Length: 149
Image (cartoon, rainbow, N blue to C red; front, side, top):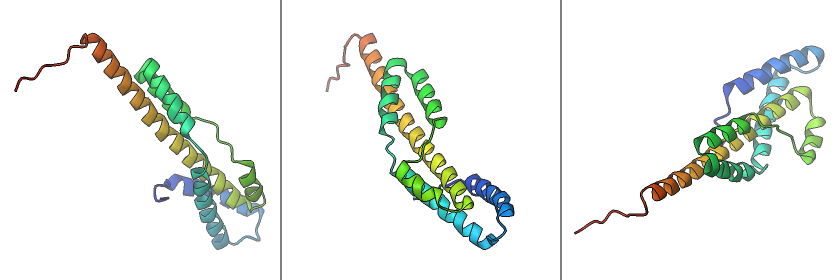
């Protein structure tokens, strides 16, 4: 389920943790790596519980209204969307160590944007298909091919 976490997320959190680790020498490197791993996995799990169906619906209508332009616009917006950690989750994360917090935030944002982008592409593609079928039906005059057997 979480095997598609990108390598750069882990590397970025390790770099951020190393700078934070310099400020907090009491954390050992091993403990920091474990906290980063736990933060990354917990962030990915938490992102799975945030609904992303609005992106599917919005991109469907954008695909119907404007075709591939709408699909591209909504996909771009989904990739650049603002991510906010739910308040009930943030209370737990805020109390955690800085390496865990950085890893959680990075992983949560990446996974939520990824889910939003997938939903936007799916909805936009379905919307474009509906538009293409409607345009084809209008241009063909409603004549269905007659097959004689």
